[in-house]
Length: 304
Length: 271
Ligand SMILES: Nc1ncnc2c1ncn2[C@@H]1O[C@H](COP(=O)(O)OP(=O)(O)O)[C@@H](O)[C@H]1O
Ligand SMILES: [Mg+2]
Image (cartoon, rainbow over all chains, first blue to last red; front, side, top):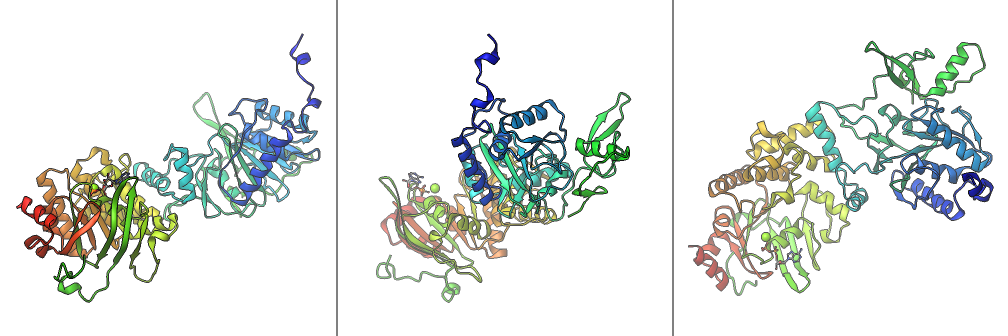
């Protein structure tokens, strides 16, 4: 007797794995989240065959949105070929017959952990971000009920205060990833641990972004053409990571967010973090057909 | 209190022509069986110091909390005259509107610094938070306004980024004061601001308050159970007992010639 004989075949589960009532709840919460941009909506968060904290929030959103005509890209820190990204992608396609892709341009749904692809997403695409901690106020207010009340009152004084104190103590704001941002002038959200580099991509974007935390059971959204403004002081500009002039060791492209690869001699080399962009650049340089789309950053500068 | 039982002028001569900045009418508040406030009327004139005295439990802090829009009364009407706006009855506003109004126009100093301060944030940050809530977004302006308010409160600037938790009681009250005056409030509420401090420190803090009052003509409502404090600070006095106002008038008159038996008892006990 093996595990295989004990478990039901996939065909016996609902389409897209989640049962109809779970998906109905997700759809309702997604619609609510779109209606109130940046506002966290609680949801039941079902069991999926993956441990909480490994992207179950994003997965439940994707499983709700997916259909047999979907084309799904899944990335982990920008890479399509990580074990986690690959198994999520394979699981989604197995339970939905959706097509798998590595190409941002081809995808209808991009599920991602901690990065937004470099190629500009369009109105026909949905970005699903996996969120470990959805509460931007957690650091200033551990009590969830009080934090909810603070959101309701747009009471962000304490959050601003922590930024003020970082500037006083360190001369700069220490927040690297997950930079708190004001959505549609009303709710502050954490954009999930994407680098500062990626936050401007959410501002007035053409695509819909849904951010979902499976363990914390909350999701929120940034609809297309919605303002997303990092909390910054008027006289201390928002700075993205200093990657504009770094060159990718493997593909030779520059002006994108890079992964740092430490070398034995203490120096570092860099590889473009959006790995499929790197692959396409290599192909293009070898004369193979590869379509690189418009990118948010051009020559290291954000181009709106 | 009607004029029949208290036929004395209620206002110093310079205030007779001015219209009040605060008008509270018929404020009532119960906590279960306890009637904390009973049909209380309060009028405050611009630039004056209104002292509120009364024994412990007489409703002074409850009244101040109402003035600060921290707590809602069961009955009553509260108007605050601010230049260029009319908010109507403040008790009827939405909570976020009350919060904004409080942040911009009302300052408060509590006896207990834990109520007024974030103990684990810096002192300057405590002041800055007030400005941040009111919408200030320039770091340099925050810094300079926090410094200015702390300086005006005679707080040593070398310690402006220390945490209140690491400061003495007197210094904590100065941080509360700086936070309260940072936005030049229309109304400064002081709930036993020096109670619990050493007598010498208490005198220094009162001196600072007096100086601020003299230089900036800040309208103050000062609550204390200590007649001495009220006497050195207040232009007018309101005496409270068991949730009601039993007597009010010019400070000198109330102290020299108390009408109500309870006030007489208070004044004579003190002398
Ligand atoms: N939050 C509360 N819950 C229950 N009772 C309260 C509350 N606040 C005040 N009281 C009661 O109301 C009365 C007036 O209290 P308070 O305004 O604090 O008096 P004072 O400041 O003059 O000492 C007291 O009997 C007190 O116990
Ligand atoms: Mg009290």
